[in-house]
Length: 248
Image (cartoon, rainbow, N blue to C red):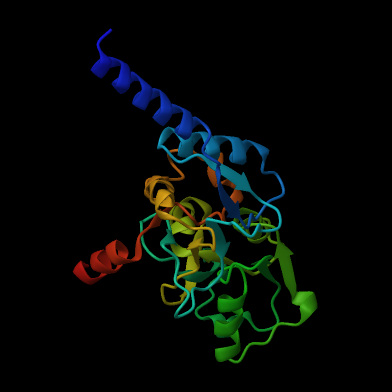
């Protein structure tokens, strides 16, 4: 073997060893379910295939956290690097849904009615829809609010006549309206309601993880998305989302 070939082989071997000993990047998800084992494994495998060696967590955040998914409204000065988008690839829109046969003309007519909402920090689950009721002069009592664990369960309460209306998200519920005899009685404005944030341990190597997450879709792997709100279909960088919305 020539000296040049020997030196080249040593360099390749050293590089492979360094990559093999790289510490996984800590990625945390504020999950909407306690059933996380399958999603953790599949997400970690998905990221690894994209060159992102990640330790996917669902518990308390660590100090070296690199990326974290958090549901909730995005505040100025604390914007995510990837924004959660709905089935149509846009920001989500909160809605109130009623049965077509109920003939509800406006949400003001929901006064005194039983309503289905969704538990948790997702603003589309209750806060935004209840704020719209308040603006319309409707203040439900605690006994009139049926709190479901997810958007499907809330719609189930409506479909089984347990409630008079249900909260939902426009893109999520649209395919279900016609075949179930449902209508959107109120729709709010599109909002930024969750996304991936950089943590204190972020470094340039995490860009591979961000790029991979930007290509992740619910239709591509539904099991991974079990830990996200049901309306979340994918994730988009803000600059791309903003430019698409302007062009529309």
